[in-house]
Length: 544
Image (cartoon, rainbow, N blue to C red; front, side, top):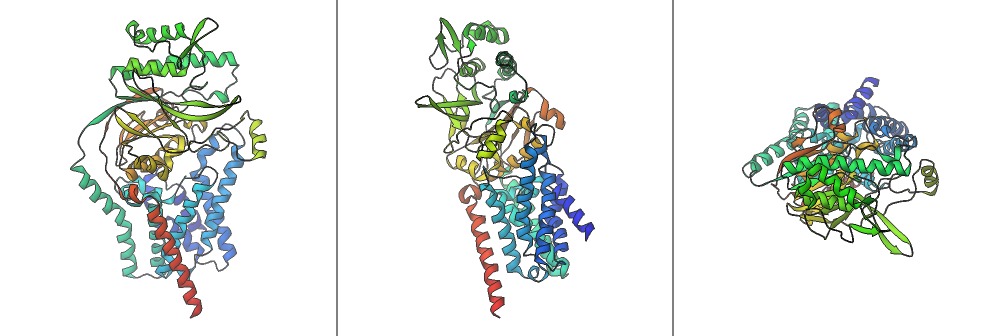
């Protein structure tokens, strides 16, 4: 019993593709079944519940270990709370796993559907908890991950739970037919993927977009003891480094240059930098001819203050777009004036086009609890002790940024882990997904790889490529089948900490998927139907 408990905990805990892809493929077939084998020998529902809580809290303790890399101590409370809540969810699920029920297909289908509903409900906990759906275990293979194009990651979760329950059924009552069913169903995702890849291989040719993806690796200012003057000088040096990286992109004639989330502090339009000094910096890095291409003294980019012309962060970015000759997507902080001295603050991504005055803006819709908004009054007081004050405002809807490379579906930070949100961009006509992020709040604990593997499935679900620009993280380009085109850095340390620009030729190939059409509605409807079937079966058995 203890051996199965520990073995299943390790297989499932390390079964996500961010840890060991091969372990994930094992977990998708029998990882949960090993634990359920322990459960079915426990007659007490109360004991099954608490054992389920303990086991799944341990699984999530492994998979969410990256959270402990956060520099502030309140993360330990948040970490423990998540483990407890997720464990309670699984404890509820474990209540229903008995030897008798596992022998009946209606219950097995109902349990798999019930698990999908439980996972989906996490999306409505605070800002949403999309981390570690069990379906992600199938994304470690280029074949099985294609199954997500049919019904999304929650469809994969249904399949993983279904196969594990059928494995347990065959284990408890060995029959050739039962084992054959397990084998055939376990192979379905791979067969689906093989057919899909073969079908699209005939058409996977065509135009490409040359992109430059900047990874800045700037330290997080909130964690450093800056005075205001020191921070201002620090930001000027950050812009110098950005210009140096942008020059590499200019030399490669990129079509699109992407900079990370909140690439520099001080917002979009605060007039902070001396105009002449800024122009001089461009000239030093790009050469004197570049100065002629800089935007003139325009009202939204520069202004005369006390007899001296000053510029803002938007001036720097518009200058980069003009000089490099490419569209530029960059993450910034921005604010809208509401009147009476009040402002609404957003985390945004702007699109700057060469020699174009009009800007396009996307506002981040999913905010990070404690970092970008503070949910409860007692937590606001706690956060204030760590220098966190105020909240940002959520964006209201998906917006496309229309570049000369096509329509871009933009996400900021972990929005890209939410399939239903990325689907909104795809429905509106997104031809490429663009993510700007910063995993630097959780350094050296595995978040960049975890974040990337969650994002990878969006390409398969939507049938479009994805490009990512990270301050700290994994900057990369991924094709519309979830395969890496290019990744900055070779080792995990280099990937997380390299300051450079990744140049990649991204195939524009895209295709329509069933998930784009149905979204999560398909698997949720099926899950609800199977749960209803299990309930009716239970009532029917009682009547007999």
